[in-house]
Amino acid sequence: MRKQLAACCLDCASCEAYQAHQTKDMVRKEDIATRWSKHYDGELEASDIICDGCSSDGEHFAWCNKCPIRACVNEKGLSNCAECEIGTCDTNAFLFNAAPEAKANLEELRSKLGKLHY
Image (cartoon, rainbow, N blue to C red; front, top):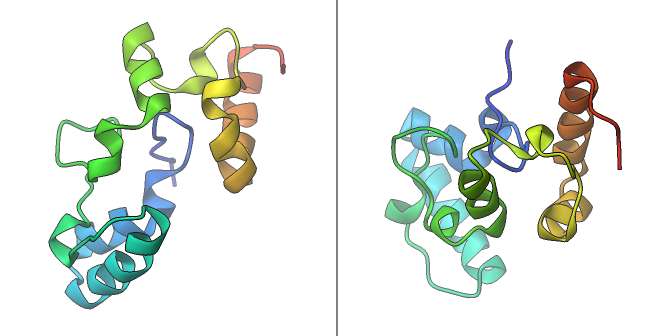
């Protein structure tokens, strides 16, 4: 199955918010909202757990509008970090430390694009 990569190279299909929103699983959305409220230091409701994928024209989780990685990729007119000449940088390093699968996706795609690893 083809991956649906977010700007940061996370696979949207593996994201629990994306999965819960796509399946309209309110129980799972409530659980995610409770856990993510602590992570994002705010009060989230199940109705806040929405996402059709970072690069889609659909709905996005509120953080997406604040995400520095998504902003950088959009500003450069790219699909994701793998297309950038830099690859791993200060903007995306925080995520790659927390989600090594995103960095693995970035490196795999950069390899396919013939870009060097930095």
